[in-house]
Length: 288
Image (cartoon, rainbow, N blue to C red):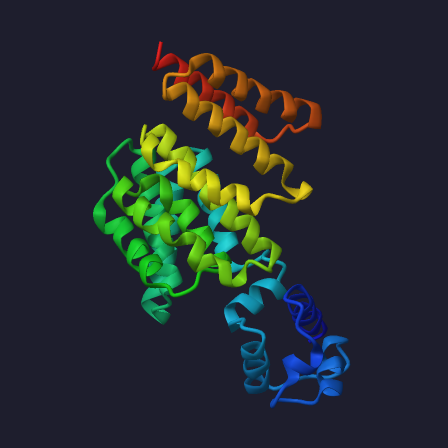
């Protein structure tokens, strides 16, 4: 139970809510303090009520308590990533079969989403056009989810490459408003920033340049902290790509080079460095 108390304390402090405010009309501040220290257990009904006092739902709380790791969703995505890396249709078929079995048993929509994601990536391996039936359940869920937390951002990030531009326009237009409620949780802020940057990248790849400026502005508002060096550098790169595609070739090249210079100086060696380089070459090659 101790990890739950610690998770609650972290969320409460991130939101600048006092113990007295969080405990209001549910438990005493002293009792809540003991829970946060792992010295007392709390009933589920009371936990729901004190979470309500700090405007966090139970799913969001459990994600924080588990450090956003080792969840069934992350485990599934690891398996899916491995299947895609190996270009293995058999592994994806096995994943789909397993997720279907679980979904038929408990009807948890999470497993339906997993089936859809696996089917979408299967179409990628087979070099086929994604089927509407494989992305529509995800689109419908995200469209009507009142608030976005870690799960929604994760789902959208993995489905986005397969969605039609018009759908991305609708969802990404709402993503800031839907994700802002839990932005005090660092993982959610990172996810929101990544979602907006991924939206910019897809619009660049699809040459939807008129849609990009508003997303530049949203990202700028979110990355004012020194902690977001890589995200700031991605933004510089995308600004350069946008300039190049808009006809300002020299300015665009210079800005993209600046981004790579920053990454090299910082010692960044992540896989996304190769992805950005490939995108740069693709942009230049197709616009010579």
